[in-house]
Length: 295
Image 1: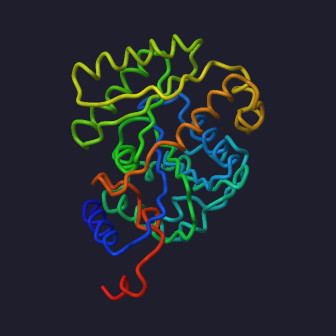
Image 2: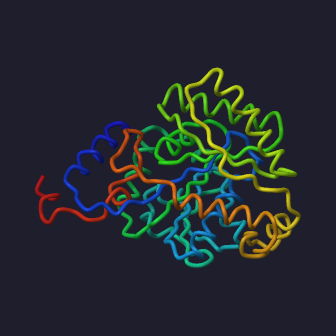
């Protein structure tokens, strides 16, 4: 079902012109507790502060927490969309600096066990959006579920968050292995999170690349070392992101620099076959007059 959906999207692309492309970045890591959501939200807020139109998709469909970390009130979420109770546009909430958030559900096991047809339905739901988006950031669940793999394949850039724990490195390697060997994703950007120094971040990256270079056809790039910073914990308690609450602290500086760097990452001129984006509305936003409906 997903493959046929991708083919439909590709055929639609050939009928489009003047693409205004959306940068899609999936933030993942394999293991829970490494700071994926914090990285995602700080990047989103920093980008929004710089004037970009940013949307965050909470893709932890069973244990959502993006809205909680920002102290937002949420009425409907993705579970209501999947049940056919509302459209995707009806669940979007506004966060700091005008960023948009698509919240997921929490405590609903059924949302973590979607069928391929339901995956396709969720992907097609993005086709109803009229939002103009410069950057879509996808905060995935922990683990290597089908949904994590789908969203990772859908992105132009996969950001792997790791911290200096053996389980974090092992789980990150397992995710990279699965994506590279079975899904054709070979380029990964790595964030070393909660490190005591830049050198520790480099050492952590070296541990990961030592095994990937030996066994996998994967290209890894270290794009940020985010230091341990008590201000991050304090900002979480305040239900704010650290780039807003304490913009001068070391972690905020590192995350702001990462966000600026991410905006320079190139967007492919044509889809590479991994889904690339979720739907045609995110792929291109200007259609040839009159000939889409007629075909």
